[in-house]
Length: 441
Image (tube, rainbow, N blue to C red; front, side, top):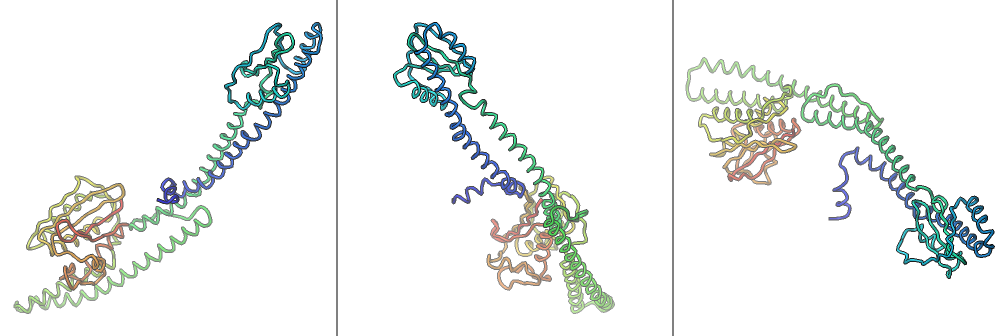
């Protein structure tokens, strides 16, 4: 796996998340660099400068202790403590034994180094802590001089406040970015939901363009496209409905004329031809209309599958075997009659070409699947897509459209796609064809 593919696995897929990263990531990077520079460069430089001044004061006090007469040293210490804001104590007759230094603190190491440079390598001294202050003990000619230096004289006072300010400003920026991006992404999400609903054949009521200029243009283009598609479908449906009505009128007169004639084999054949023509006209009109006049509703898909399969099997004179496997209840929002027709076409085709048919309904997180399998001859993999073409009859192998108008599978796929799904053909475990209707939930 490449580095780019590995990174993409952890990136958010939504526009909101990606936009937030685009805004926040550079800010976090800049703040991180600023923090690093502050603590590793500026803070260290400032600390060394302050520690250098303290080391100079310690060296001066040490020199004064060694060079000033004993009687004058108390007054000199008091004056030094007042001017320097140090707490200075003299321990008469004591000595300093420098311990092994174990501290790795940057401030302590810098202070030790600078004091040693100022007072000389041969003079014993130790540094420690008294609370937050620094305790420095230096050996002088007749004792130990203890100097307690306030923390703010050695290093920056409470540098953690800098981090708190950085984190606080970052959180405020993040909140503003989330609020702003949410308002910008919401129109895009609404447009996506409207397009998805329209793709499923559902009504898109109350949708109006709003948001940024580019989003408004995209929304207006969607509305224009929807109007054109609806106008095209309406015109096509009205035209074919008129053609169907005009053709059914002479067919009705022919049926009446045949009903008055003497019944024989030729008359029965003509009646069968007229019935087939009427059935073909109904198929043409259904294909052109795409079941678009039916309003979507919420119903039990499991019940629809069981009822449809039972109706198709019952309507066939020779009967058939088509057991159904489905959950007890599966709510679904769609066009009930259209889905019934879609499934009926597949089950009827399967019963025509297989002795045994099995129908299964299942669902996953995103879609419901209806699988219709049979033990018939099947369709070669390279010709399965061809079977969906309108008015197509397969010449070899299995002919799914035999005895019909050549629109059975075309109508079924058109209905599935009107619900935002599709129909795919594959190899059945029973040896024949497997037709799977996938409908998004």
